Image (cartoon, rainbow, N blue to C red; front, side, top):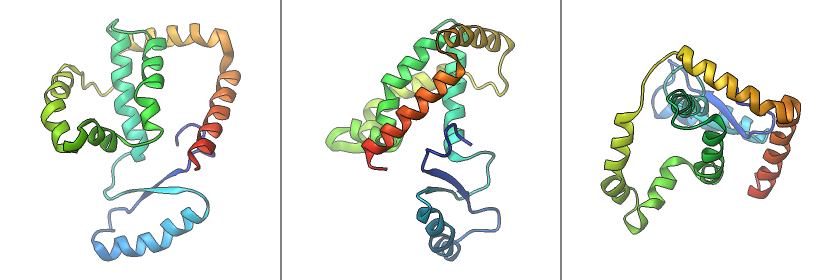
Length: 175
């Protein structure tokens, strides 16, 4: 589960191996999805079985890049957190990556974004690592830097601040 699961409206809902086709989707939409929406949750449906909730998979991809940036001395833990929090994190609270990329294309939308921004994204993707276990050096660096950051506030204060801010954000978004 994501952190603060009780505050977050998103809830995983995998169709499973045996669910395929339009009829299954219609039954699913009226059944479980309606039940979850009645509880104030927003089901996020995975149409194929994969390890992890959709949001956790996206978070894992971002975290791998964040860890790699710290491990290679490109940025500190604090700067990576700041860059996400004050950059795409602000937009992600409002819209998903596809909608944001579409808006970046202006009147040409997603097609223009692919044409204009695609090459710069491809350059960055080529420079990204694709390791599947955390390198020991990265683990040491991240743990050391996080330890220094936590000395200032402590885990309890940090968690409380996160939950209060998340609740305020959800109210501001009308969720």
